[in-house]
Each structure stands twice: as structure tokens, then as C-alpha cells.
Image (cartoon, rainbow, N blue to C red; front, side):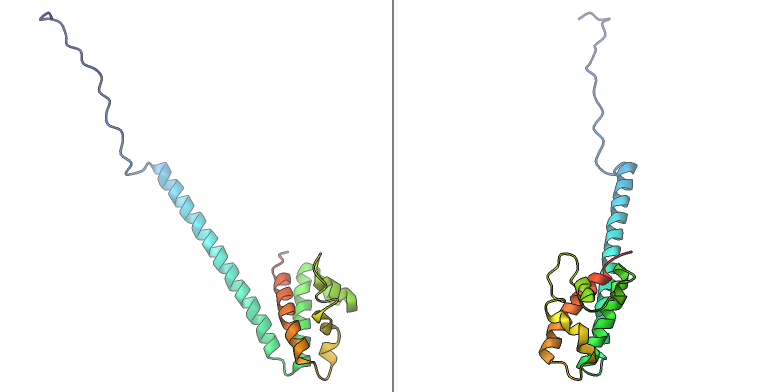
Length: 152
């Protein structure tokens, strides 16, 4: 080498940036994810509270009835009120038309051909068989919850 020659060295890259702290965009993404998870949890809790309140309303109305016939009448009234959520004219249906409405779309004939037939005259009977009432109550409760879940 000659004394006046420059010694050239290779270019050195700076070290790669560390992973912490993250860039502001990642903080924004994390905040948006946190808000989304919080909103989903809030809506799920709200839905569950509403479901519990609807179940409690049905159970309380049926339990407050004085006798078996009054329990059938209470279930019928609750179903008619809930039916208005699906069709405003549904609460005025009578007889088998009402029972077919309660069977729902493509459902099995639980009301028109099963335990639900008690709704037609059970509220007017002097005595209602306990077995028939026991078969009707879970059926009516399930349909009530289905009708109350419908949104307008």
C-alpha cells in the first residue's frame, strides 16, 4: 500500500430496531381489538340477562296462577303476547290456526297434534290433568322463548 492511499472499509448497517416499544400503529390495532372484545362481551352479557329476565317472567306468571286451568290460561296469554312480535295479527288467531302458528315453520306438530292442544280449552276446564299440564309447560316455555327472541 502506498502511504497516501485511503483505506476503505465496508459499510456497517445499524442494528435492527427492537420489538419494544411497538410502533404507534400497533398500539392502535391493540386498542381496537380490546374495544371489539369488550363490545362482544357486553352484548353477550346483555343478551344473557335479557334471556334470564324473559324466563323469569314466564315462570313467575305461570307460578302465580291459582290452579291448573289458570296456569294454562297464563301460558296461553304469554304465548299470544309473544306471538305479536312475529306477526301483529297472530294473537287473534283461533283454534287450529293458532296451534299451527305455534308449531312454527317446518316444526313438528307439538301444538296442533300433541300436548299443545291443551291450550285450546285447558284454560276453561274445571280440572286439568297434572300430566297434561306437565307436558305443556316446557313446550310452551320453549316456544315463548323462541317467539321472544325474534327481533323486529
